[in-house]
Image 1 (cartoon, rainbow, N blue to C red):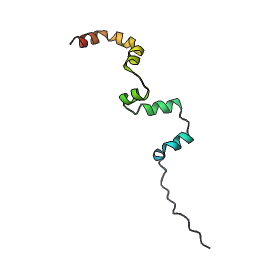
Image 2: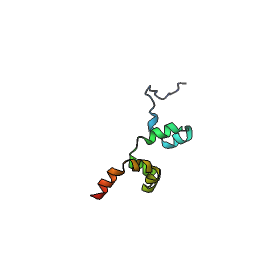
Image 3: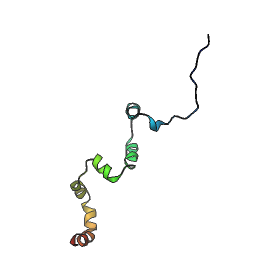
Image 4: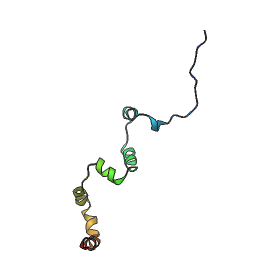
Length: 78
């Protein structure tokens, strides 16, 4: 009796093409992994994903706003 074996290839497996469910089921991301992935998306998308509002930004970065107050005053007067 002769067995039919599927043709085997030595092509590497591209893990990036695996379904998202594979990653959810088989991998726990570290904080660094999550941050690295988030760095790859646009700032606007990141703000939407994190549900960050303009008020959140203003509250969080008041010190930077104070440092650049002259710039804002000149720009807002126009």
